[in-house]
Image (cartoon, rainbow, N blue to C red; front, side, top):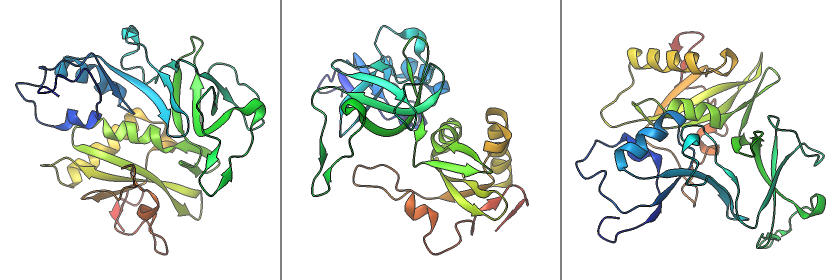
Length: 272
């Protein structure tokens, strides 16, 4: 970036986990896009790297959909990914396609030119009201039109009738300095239907220990509602990835085996 005087980039927020360097703030970046950054790390990232970092939201199927304006400095650390981008209409809707009022959670629908019509050899995508593209992502919108990602429709834990978005829990876990990245998955439970499991990759130099587990659990209890605090914790050297380098969660669920095996059970206070 320094050599080529790059002015725009996608900046993985995990760079915050790297040791500080004397040249961190030396760059020509006018705007960096960050995705899913824990709110408490946002301002620190901007200060450390001497740049403007803004959230955004897009998909391969629709291209850019929402972005946070550079001028919206008051939204740093808010967790919002911005508002509708150029040539895009956006709304949050319920299962029937009805637009929801500000503050309520529903599926994000996008409309505009240049949106795909179907998947190769899989036919056309199901039609939606007035040709809105259904993203499969849960969002809420505030009264000013700023959007907040709640999670994926398919990336939820259903615990005792409560829907828990994996993304929210991962943001809390990723904010800890010892945690490099995390993945939250559901595991079967006879009493509650599903329980929450946190899969964690630790930063180099950190290792699982009773003290570290106590810190993880206490941090979650301070920042999450009691029913959202993971019951199970497991530690990994790395995560399986999809072709687009996203964490592949299905292998973490352990097809054909007990996904609780090898995990620390917070309720029973022991390893399984």
